[in-house]
Each structure stands twice: as structure tokens, then as C-alpha cells.
Image 1: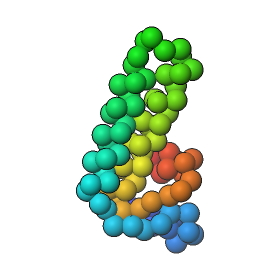
Image 2: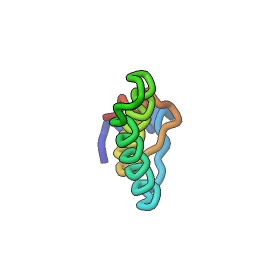
Image 3: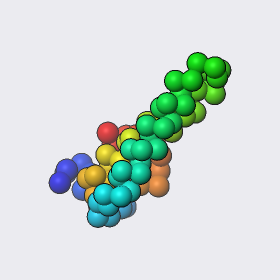
Length: 81
């Protein structure tokens, strides 16, 4: 896999976990819905930020899961990109 991700797993920051297609599809689907919400110009910018942030996290987590890892730390999920 990826040596950097493997190193993070060795330190316990990431947890190796087999890829699950259904979970990946669910994360991508959730991200797409949240992005659609973020595009709602009827909401304030502050209200649009939250779904945009959560969509980006879902996409980042989907990428990490595709590589066979999981993290409970949101910052680390983004950092692994």
C-alpha cells in the first residue's frame, strides 16, 4: 500500500480495516448530498459551510477507506490526503 499510511498505522494513529464497498458508496453518496446542500444560495454562508466541510470529510474518509484504513481523528483524515 502506501508507506506513509502504513507508518501511521504502526504508530496507532490509523487502524487497518479491509475496504468495504458498501461503506465507500455510502460515504460518496453522503458527500454528494451535502455538497448539493452547500450550493443552496438561500442559506447564509455560515450555514453552507457546515455541509461543505462535512462533504469534504466524507470524501477524504472514503479515500482513506479505499486504501484500507480508518481514523477516528477528523484532522488526520484530512491530513492523510
